Image (cartoon, rainbow, N blue to C red; front, side, top):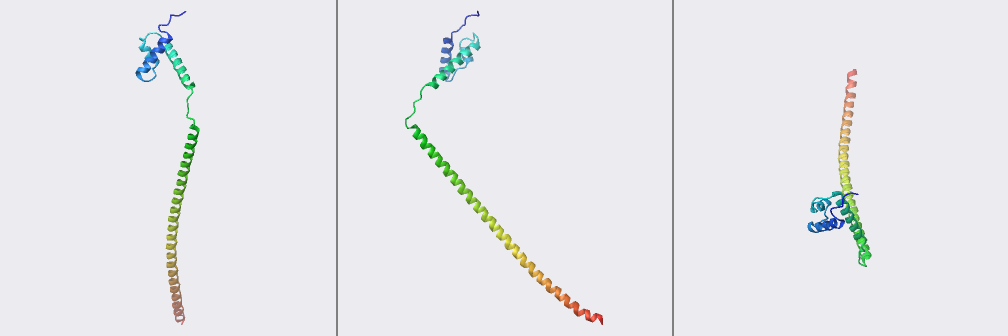
Length: 153
């Protein structure tokens, strides 16, 4: 059989609890080992302290937590209010998106109307130019007809 332990489980747990209260957080096995003079096996301190902490955590978890009687009603009311807020946010988003799409469509429609107007103006210019060229061709053909009988003599 091995050597007897330098510190009992109670000594290790008591030291750990004292250190935890002193530093305001859970002590580590190294903190406890140092407080016990750095003697003994650190691994044993670690096992005992972790076992104690796990048992304490389980005990706290098992304690019955008293909840207000109207808690479910309050949670339901909060969920309903949250749902309404989400619906309002979605409605506003849809409304803003629709307005943006309408403005975009109106701008495109205006741009299209401007392009159509410019193209109609250009078409009218080309029609006038074509009419002028047609007249010029007729004049040239008439002159050619006038010149042709005189050249054949």
